Length: 158
Image 1 (spheres, helix red, strand yellow):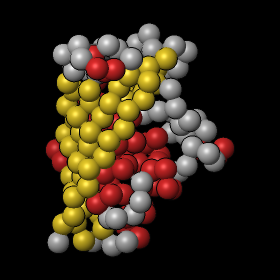
Image 2 (cartoon, one colour):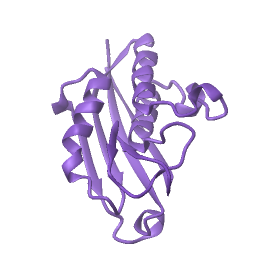
Image 3 (cartoon, rainbow, N blue to C red):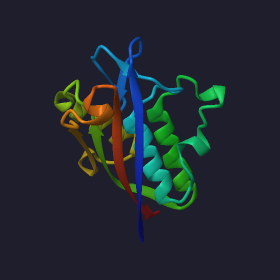
């Protein structure tokens, strides 16, 4: 048996913070606002994994009202989500992520992002996909105001 979950996250771009996507610090003039390190890639994937197991969402397990998650490493939260679903009898089988942003171009960073996510999920890199798309100048992403991410994860019974 397999189960599939979909995750979404978005954060506003701001000055004075690093841009962390898929566990990688990406050189850019702006970073993402958030309680944790604001890694929208890890957040969307965490929600996809938790959703596939009907185990709530990232805010249920790691609420931004709890000071212990201030500045948290979102890839660490992703690993914790894998532990949560493992306790329910599942393991992550594959993950697919699409990052929506205008700048910077992510192409050179995608291999490192895939490797970091695969390591967190305990998967071979061939089972983790990361793609980057622009929003063709439309909406908050297109205006360069923020970054959004969609993620799909498939779980299998352990």
